[in-house]
Structures are given as structure tokens and as C-alpha cells.
Image 1: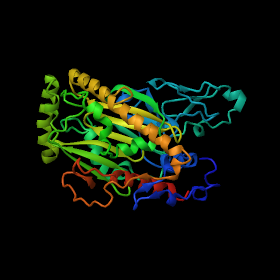
Image 2: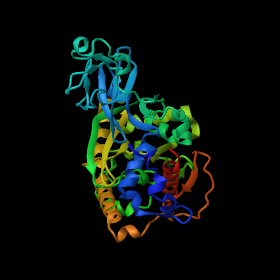
Image 3: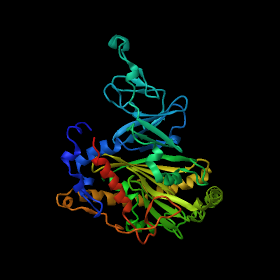
Image 4: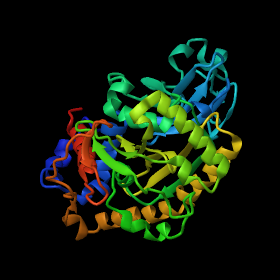
Length: 439
């Protein structure tokens, strides 16, 4: 952020006074303050690994997909040799966006302002009046689109960071990689056998981006919000929104990293989809193959979970990525990617697609409950009186739980009857560490 070195955050805000993790309280200013929001763009979004898309969105040479890293628009493009590039969607001449479409196929990106053009790797290939205007002195090799510092393709999921000194993606993930695998791998355990189905759902919610991220990482305390959905029988078995009978649910956190996740043990997909015989048979066969590959780990399914700062995952019912793009301290642009097994029969994909969108997204019954909660929570953080009092994050504060040998992470909950906000506390511990770091 321009001027941040001139006016360091520590000179403007006493961060330590805003967060008391030992006491379990967090100032409402984190969810409404413009200064904090501006510094989040530099200290968090400019330095973290961020999920930006999936390779199945750009399968062919010349394909592109526009995404975001914080407030920065970026282009993901596949080159002639199949390589994937990620670069800032901003012309080097005057900064105008060179790509105005969400996705498509093109040989070049063309700036509508002065006509500079770039290839799929971001190289500057066209400059109007190059000879007579610049007398051949403009070094085009130095004026290509700005590339991300690092780009990683992990089992088809694409991640990027602006920080050249950031650790490799898998080091950044740590034990959270286990839960990401559960979302990305095929149902039968084949690594990376997934694809995005149905495009990307995008909508604006008048709330702070952290509320969605913390909810997925993990808030099992808000079940009261979805009682109406539970009675609507939107789940595939026709019983409720989800089918959790006989399932053990374990929530975990990753101290120092900010990630949080949930594991579902003994989940029977075939039984859940009993009203769809072809789908039930598919999951039954897949589970047998999964058990041959993974043994005791075959019956573990992941989700929800949040990879710090703003990528949330769900490995089952629905299988999805959710992105919380910041658009101001009181506004978030939410993106939903839905995943299915790449090799699944079309009938199976269609049933899952319909259920996923019925459950989540802007038209999903569950998401509407959450959006209303986050909207009013953000309103409650902006008032003169309300902002004087902190939010409470004390649930499960002093509880010590034994590790679970089946899943990595520090266990914060091992029964829905005893939820915890341990994952949220670790999320804000990471937030505080990054925001307090020297420039």
C-alpha cells in the first residue's frame, strides 16, 4: 500500500490492544476499520499463498481465466506448450486492464486504452507507433505484464503469491495438505482426479471477508442458524440438509499457520445417495477402491476448512472451494467452485451439481442463512457503541483434547456436543503475527 513505510501500522493502531487470545476476545474494529483493511492488503494478501483457480478451467493452449489476489486482478493463461502463467491484469503503460472477460481463449491480450498487447506469457509483443514514437528505444523485454512471484500447481489447484521469499506451497500448508487432498483427490482415492463443474458462482455480501473465512475454519457452533434448512430435506437422502448419522466429526487447528479444518470419519456416500441408484453404485465401487489404496484412512472425508487467509474447502456434501475476496472492510466478493471426479459418469456429475447448488452458493438455502448472519455481524461492528465492546471467542478456551491418530492437527473438537472456537483463535493469531510484522 502506498505510504505504508511512511506511516507504519504500529504508529496508527495498537494491534495488541485489539486481540486477547488468552482471554478469548477480539475487537470489532477488525471487521470494520478502514486502516486495518488497507494494511491487510499489503501484510496478508501480498505475502500469503492464495488459491487462484483450477487447471481444468484453462485446459487448452490460449485459454485464460481471470482471478483475484486480494484486490488485484490477475490473469491465468495457458501457453502454447501447455505451461500456465499468472500475471497482473494491468497494462504497463497506464494500468488499464488488458483482459475484460472472465474466461475465454485468445492469442493476445490487448489494452483498450493505447493498444499495447501481450502474449499468453505476459510478454509485450505490440506497441503502436513503436518505431516513430519511441525511435526503437523502448525495451519491450522490460515492459511485460507483472508476473506473480511464485505459482504452484497442486493436484490441479492453482496457487500464487507475490512474495518471492515465501516458503514453498506445501511447506505453507503443513498438515493442512491432508485436508486439501481430501477435497482434490478423486472419490476412489486417485490423486488429483478432480475438475470444476458448472463454472464459478460469484456474488457480493455486505460483510467483512474474515467472517466467512473463520466460519469455515471451523465454526460448528452455529448449527442453530440452519434449523430451517434441516427441515427442508434438501440433502440427497431426503432427510435433511446433510446426512451425519453414525459419523465422528473432528475439528483441528494448526498453530502458527492460521489454518483450520474438520474431518468426517465413517461417512457412507453410497447410503446418502440411496435415492439415486447410479450415484450410490458409483460411490460404493469408489469406496472399495479407496479402501484398497488407503486402508484405515479410506472412510475419512474432509471439510469444512480454511487455508489462511481466504480459501475455504469442503471435501464432501458439497465438494467445493469458497473464496472470500476482500472488497472493503464491509464488503466481500464470494466465489464458489464446485468439484467432481473428472472420470465420473455424466449422470453422477449432474446429480452432484444440482445438489451442490441447492445447498451452497447465492441460491443455496444454507448459504443464505450464513450471509444474513455475516451481514448483521458486520453491521454490529461498525456502530459507535457496539465497536466499544469486543466479540467473544472463548468457546472451548481451556479445553485440552487428545490427538486423533487418524488425522493431523491439534484437536479442538471431537464431538458436536462440545464445539470449540480454537480454530478461529488460531486464525487470528496468524492474522496478528502478519499484521505486526515489520515492513
